[in-house]
Image 1 (cartoon, rainbow, N blue to C red):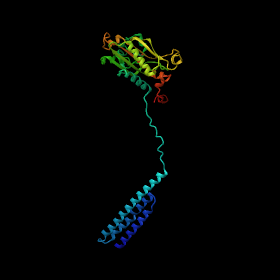
Image 2 (image 1 turned 90 degrees about the vertical axis):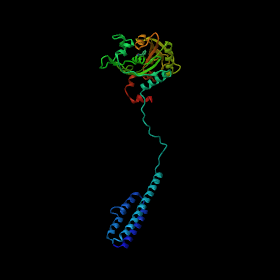
Image 3 (image 1 turned 30 degrees about the vertical axis):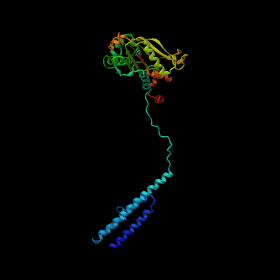
Image 4 (image 1 turned 180 degrees about the vertical axis):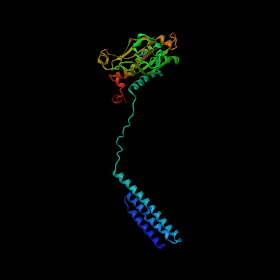
Amino acid sequence: MDLATLTADLEALRDRALSAIADVSDAASLDALSVDYLGKKGELTAVLRGIGGLPPDDRPRVGAIANEVRVALEIALEERGSNLRASELDRRLTAETVDVTLPGRPIRRGTLHPSIEAMNEICEIFAQFGFVVHESPEVEDDLTNFQMLNIPLDHPARDLWDTLYVDLPGHLLRTHTSPGQIHVMRSTPPPIRALLPGRCFRYEAVDASHGFEFFQVEGLMIDRGTTMADLKGLLDQFAHAMFGAGRKTRFRPGYYPFTEPSVAFDVECLVCGGVGCPACGRSGWMTILGAGMVHSVVLRYGGLDPEEYQGFAFGMGPERIKMLKHGITDLRLFLENDLRFLEQFR
Ligand code: PHE
């Protein structure tokens, strides 16, 4: 092999390759061409192998030409490739359409449990009157859940709160949020306006209106000269905010060992508007909470002097409020975790 032949071969190869590259019409064929010419077993590589047979003086010249050919082919391959990609994109842009008006896939969001939602609504209403949320433990001792609330050991009033006891002597799962009154009185100097939302537990046979686990929201107000009129005014405001401004309300005498006097607070039946229907037991009224003036025994256990401070407390079940508001007839729905129920409260 001599210099002139090799040079001519290289030039012929280049011309052939360039026109093949120009003719190619898809990316796969272009890749194949690249392998045919520049690959390990490609034509250019084969020519380069021939350089070894030249006299040493000629090798650099042929090497330089071969290099130019390689660079020219690489540039041509690259340009052709990007042209092909651009026209492929053009083709797809005209052939395929994206409907940007299609609605997106909805993101599934969780929701608050209706019991929690009801507690939040209750707390928000009382917050407007300056009531602040406090926390209180779910595992209590007998002293705080009962005795300091004026319910002595072996007192028959305990029957009102069937109790689940825990494996720690003298301890139980709180049967109501009222022991929170003691904690708040002992930790907060008056004036006090406290709310205690939380979970309660009772040893109950479960039915449509009883659960062994439910929520309560306790309210406590303590100040000098707080009266029953303050309690009545506040609860009226609450009922109107929760159930509608025109709703009639009434207070009935009630009994709780930790309040004296004690009341039950009713709102005009939300179903029949007071006429009487099955939902309200034909009475026209629905009871929404229990309340009363904090008993002097309880004030003393809370570290307060009943001669100086007075106050009231109330306790309500957020599930019951939700049931009355939405005409829900079975308390068990709140604990069954059935999405068909829960998703109605988004
Ligand atoms: N703790 C009472 C109950 O569980 C409700 C209540 C609270 C009544 C505060 C009066 C005052 O039934």
